[in-house]
Image 1 (cartoon, rainbow, N blue to C red):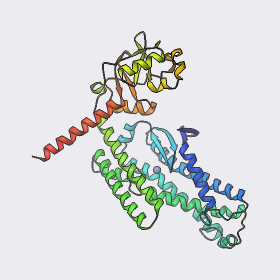
Image 2 (image 1 turned 90 degrees about the horizontal axis):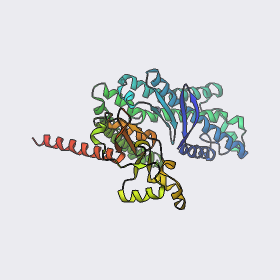
Image 3 (image 1 turned 90 degrees about the vertical axis):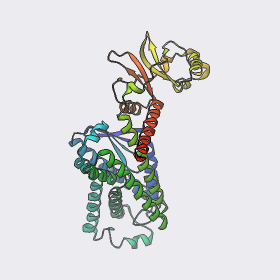
Image 4 (image 1 turned 60 degrees about the vertical axis):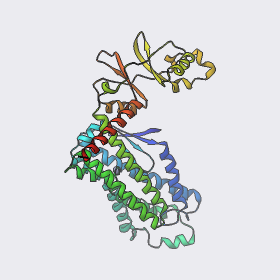
Length: 391
Ligand SMILES: [Zn+2]
C-alpha cells in the first residue's frame, strides 16, 4: 500500500506505509543516540525530537535524490519511468515497460545504475566538506564534545551534527549500494558489465550468483564482528538476490510462451443478474475462485469469491455479481504469457480474460496457469540438459 506525495518531471513519487514506520524508527534512533550520531543530549526534548525528525526527513530527501538520479538519466535515454516508490530502506524506480529495461544498451544501464550511488557519494562529500570548511572539522564544531559533556546544547549548535550525520549516512548509502549484490545498484552495474560480453540472461544469472556469494561473505564478516544488524541485512540481501533470480527465470520462461497455448478455453461465466447467494453456491459446485461476468454474452467484468465475501452473508441475496465485480483486465491470444503476468501485477488481479480482435472472449488465463507453465517448461528444460550431459 502506498500513496502519492509529489510529481517530479512527470514522474509520480509514492511512499509506502512501511516507509512511514521506518521514518519513525529512524527518528527514534537519532533521538536516543549520543553525539555525533544522534541528539540524545539535546535539551529540551522538543528540540531533540525536532532535530531527529528533521534529520530523518532530510535523509529521505537524499534517498529520493538517489532514485531521481536513476530515473531522470533513464528517461533521458528514452526509458519511460512509471513511478518512484520509497519503501523500507531505499526505493524503487519502476520502468514502465520491462522490455525497455532489457533493450537498454549495457553501457547506458551501467550509467543509470551508477547515477544513484554516485549522487549519495557527492552529497556526502559536499556535506562533510561544508562542515570542514565552515567549522574546521568534518564533525562540525571541534569543541562540541564540551557542550555535550555539559549536557546542554541549543538547537542551532546541532546544525553541524545534522550535516555530519547526513553526510556520513549518504557516504555509507553510496558505498553500500555499489556492493555487487544484485538487485542492488552495484549488482546491476556488474550485470551491465557482464552483458557486454555475454547474453543478458547469462549476465543476470552470473550477477545473481555473485550477489548471493557476496551476501554470504557479508553475513559471515558481520557475525564475526558481532554486527547483528548488518548480518540481518546480509540475509535480507541474500533473499532478495535469490528472489530476483527466480523472478528473472520466470519472466524469461513466460516471454517464450504465447497466451493461446496455455489459456483455458472451456471458461465458465456467470450472468450479471446472478445473486451473490447463488454465486456462492455456484462456486462450491464448480470449485474455481473467479469467473467472467457476462451481459447478453459479452464480458463486462470479473467476479471472485473474495469480491462476494465483502458483502455480509445475510445481505448477499440482495446483491448481484454485477454490484461487486471488478473491471475486465484482458490480453490478446497472441500476446506473450509475460504480458498476462504483467497485467495481473499492474491491476492486482489473479486472472485475465483473453479477448480476440472483436472483443469476444476466447479464453481465460489465471496465475496458477502461469505457475504451472513455468514449472513444466522449467522441468523439461532441466530434463533436456541432463539428457545432453549423459551423452
Ligand atoms: Zn539505486
